[in-house]
Image 1 (cartoon, helix red, strand yellow):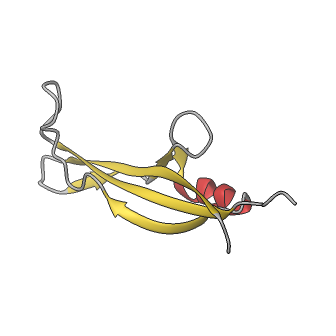
Image 2: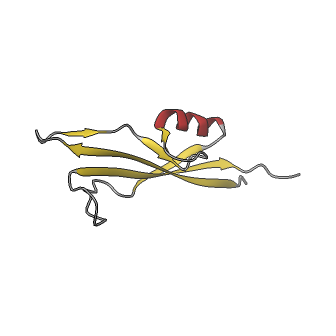
Length: 94
C-alpha cells in the first residue's frame, strides 16, 4: 500500500475597487512553497511538481474578504485565498 506525505500551500490574490466601481486584481501568489515570502503562482507550481508533489485538493478558505477582519483594514480591498493540499508518495526504506 502506498504511503503519502502531505503539504499545504496558500494561494492568494488581492483586489481593489477603483473609483469607477470596477475591481482590479493582483496575480495569484503561493505562500509556503519551501521559499520565504510569496512566490509567483505558475513557477512555484512547476517547482512543486518537479519535486514530486501532486495537487490533491483546493479549498477556499477566505473568499471575498473585504478588509473587515482587522481594525486597520481597508474596506476597498478584497483578498481571495485558497488552501492547496499536495501529496506525494513516501519512499519506503528497505
